Structure formats: structure tokens, C-alpha cells
Image (tube, rainbow, N blue to C red; front, side):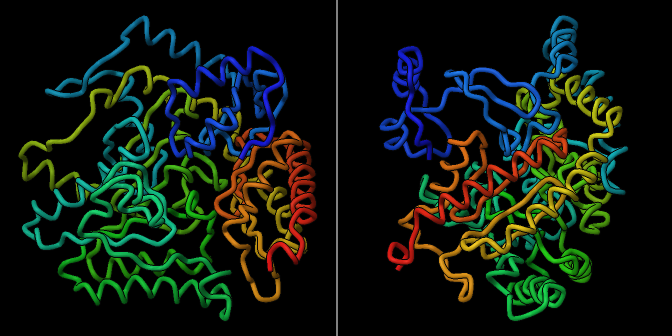
Length: 464
């Protein structure tokens, strides 16, 4: 929630025009029209300047996507060159283009073992929707159409289409329109140790949480369960990092019951965890499908992909028949060229290695916040962190939702020049992967100041 009012006539005019015509995503329009939007004007590195000239540290890398930071001339130059050479190429009707072919080959080189095929789209939602269709197509071609139930998790986020919203595990999202969640989706609890298993050690809880998947498979019937969809860590659902024991056991369960494993790497992919893919960080071997977006181009161009295993691709090829799915801009040559250059820079400048090194330091600083009076739990992985705010540390009692404590903390940080995200009362940080240790120090300083200011604002009388 932005508490900072515009201070000049030009800003006010822009806000009025914005309110008149622009319907923003994930926005309370009543609040937006009352407060006005923050107008971003320019950006460089990890910093954004608004229309008033105020510099803000982008502690969110956009939406966990501007991994290389802002203002990379190389990416602009590559896009311009490709636009002049071949500005568009459709991928329907057995047509292709060289940048898309080269990008597919490069992604196969980087991705977890066995993912040797790529289906391009434009957003994370489209990549996940593609994966969902491929799951159902695969089992139909395999002669098992009755395997049509998908299992996902509470507090998951997989996108904002009707199908991907249905996969997501926050019921408030279903209020956006009718028909959600769609049929054929079952859900298990999130591997959130602090709220769902704090009576156990994290290691023991990881196995318990994985066991919830086996229980659900047996309840539904293994002959009916098609796939399990999950993020390596849960981002927009609450910045949840699972215990180390969780993912290896999840993989064993999927193999045991012949359930396809779909890993949503839209946020975690391309270095966020200190590895190219979250699968590497969490020990996930040979997933059947992996969805990627955001960091593939550092969001300099809208692009995403679904990485497809040999098991699934071979079935599509050998059985034949048209796969009635795709997008006008699938395999866009400009997007592919930008993605290739983005990856080249990441390799040349050791950006993933920086995320691992600086991420370790970042994690140490975040861990020190656990002693703060209104912080109940902290967790981090690479350059990603969640800070859980609580009204009572001893009982783990959360603040009353109506107080919107997370929004207040976010506003306090923004006033001091840092953008962080309130996911309810969890404060999320995921800065650009090029961030340095001195810049992390600045992020931490402002975060601590925002927590202190929030604690002063909410007394015991206010929280009851």
C-alpha cells in the first residue's frame, strides 16, 4: 500500500490518466483510484526512479524477474538487431526460426537431465497451462485417460488463467470469476514448517509433509492421479522454503505411483536459488515437466517455456496426432534472441555464482531478523527470503488480517527507498541477482528500520 502522495502537477496528471484508462493486474481498484499509482520513470541496475525523481531499491527484481537488473544495453541492441532481421516468425504449420531453435538447444543444455524438448509461450501462466495440457495429452495417448486428477498444494501460485488459478492454492483468487477451481484438482497442505509442523524437527516435518502427497494419491486412487504440480519453493503463496528432506521423498512417491512430476520454476529458475534451476538446489532429479519464464529474458521481453521430458515428448511424436495448443507469439524470434543474450551475459559475468555467494551473506543477515519482536520466522534460499510477522512470538499468533500489518511494513520500507512485497503478513525479498554485498547491507538496513517502525505502530492494545 503506497502512502506517499504525488508532489507535482505532472505526476498528478499521470495518475489521473492512469485511473481513467488502465486496469492494473492484482489491484484493488477502489484503493488505486483513491491513492493513485506510483509512476516508475527509469531504472538502472537494482534501482528504479519514480516520476518525482526518488530512487528506490528494487528488492523484488520487478516480480522476481529482472535478474540482470535494469538498463542492459546489450539486451536492447540484440532486440533491435533481431527486429530488423526477422521481427516475427510464427511457429505453427511446421515453421521455425533460428533464434528459437538455438534457444531450445541452450535450454536443454542448462536444464535438469532428461528435459530435451521445449514448448515456447509468453508467460508463466501459459507455460503452466501448457504443462497441464501435456499431462492430460500424455495419459490419453498412453491409453490411460482415467488418470486425470492433478494434485497441487495449498498456498501455491501457478498463474492467473482459469486453469492455473485453479492449480493455485489461495481460495481468494477464485473470487475473480466463476468456474474456479476447475474439476480434477486435489490439494495437500504446504510444507510450511513454522505453521504446519513446528512440533517436529524440520527434517522430520519434511518427510511428514511429503507423506501428505502419498496419502492423497492413495485416497484418490493411483490409477486416477495424473500429476503433482509444485514450485521448488513457494513464492507468491507465502515465501515458503521446504525442509531439505521434502523434495527427495516427493520424487520417490511420484515414481512409486507413476505420477508425473511437474516442477514450476517460473520464479526459481535462472539463478534465484544460487543454481541455474531450483531442481538442482533441492535435489529434484529428472522431473517430467518444468515450467520457466521471468528470468529467461530477465523480463526484457515476454517469454516462457515448458521443458518436456523424453518420456512425454516421445509419446507425442510416436503416437502422432495434432496437439491443438499454442500461441501467436510462441517461439518469437526477438524474445529468443534476447533470452540467448541474457543467458550469455549470465554465464560471462558469473551471475548465478554471484547469487550463490551474495545469497549466503544475504541469508545470514535475514536469519538475524528472527530475534526481532514482531518476527516469528525467517527463511531464505539464495537471493529469496520470507519474513513472517507475528503478533505473539511465543504462541505464533498472527496479526488480525484487518490490520494489514504487512502492507504497513511494505509502506514503511518504500518511504525509506526499498520495494519489498507483503504477502499477507509475510515480507518477501528477491532482489536482482547482480546485487552486491554493500547493496545487500543497504537492503537489510531499510528492512530493519521498516520492521522497527511497524512494531512501534502496532501495540499490544491494537492487536488484542
